[in-house]
Amino acid sequence: MKSRIPLRQAACLVGGTLFGVAFGDKLFPETEAMFGDPATDIFFGLIGAFFAMIAYETVAMLFRPD
Image 1 (spheres, rainbow, N blue to C red):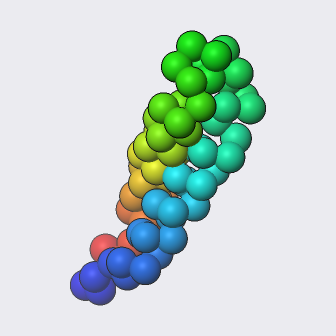
Image 2: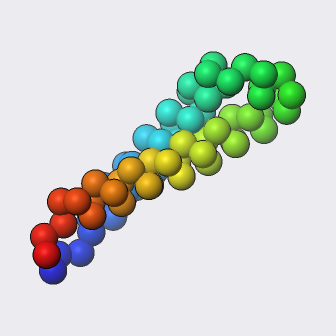
């Protein structure tokens, strides 16, 4: 059984974080108005990384050899 490549996981985490930071406050402007800019960017970056890892693990599980 091959082990996972950590570079792919890291790229997925970075991509999800950047996507969350770049588009989170544009998709939910009321959240930025409530909490302010830096806190909202950090929050959406973490949420983006979380969903990116769920997506990565799902795809890895589907294409993993038995």
